[in-house]
Image (cartoon, rainbow, N blue to C red; front, side, top):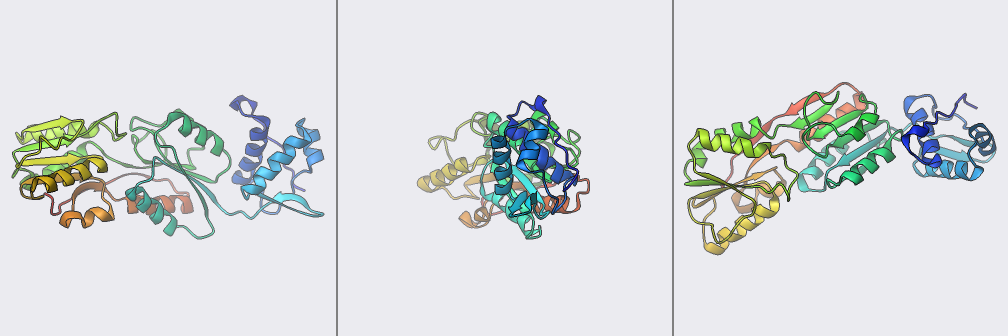
Length: 331
């Protein structure tokens, strides 16, 4: 039997069951408990901890379901194989997030276990998922809930095991893979100026109430238009009635992109000549729709591959990924 002793932290505001599960999970993750180590019997652990036998049974059964421990006759409960377990929390499901996840999974050994969750920009859901994950995983990959910094809930995770993805500010945590929603966007638009200048007006469709996309992009868009003396507008909602030849649209949300394409078709306006379109975030579908949708995007496949290297090597990683303009038929 191992020399394992419970490390109970009642200040976390957790139930006795959660405290017990987290204590054993953290011991496994930190290496204090190793593969094959025998855990105390239910009676022994109940006596040492003061927890009821029922609580111990429930904790052991939950740990078995999570694959952290196993049980066998005459042997009792013991630590299961040391398969690395990864907690991956993304914001929501989309085509480009699927590319990220697939690249991440493709670059990990098959023996690695990955639990994928989504917070959907719900603060309470985000905090609960983070709290429930603590101590249960060897590594944590989290898409932040905003672009301002690091959420306080993440500060309870060992920073060496945490990788912040997509949104956030460099330096707020040890390890990160982020994209720049400000200067990089302005640089991309400047690169495409020769195509944009053929239009009379540039319209950004952005509603802070409908998208978590950082408002930094609005500032970048305005700077670009003012620098190039381009007539522009920022609107919260696309209007089919206001569409006319000579306009170029910059759509953050794919739902707005769809409405623009449908309106141009309805009015008989040609994309790429009479109407210009720029979309945010590339997907395989955008490569082929209407001969190709012009996009401003980071490389989510690269983000996934680099995240996998972080998990495998546990080496520090702090990088802001490039954002690029991909000119296609619609501009």
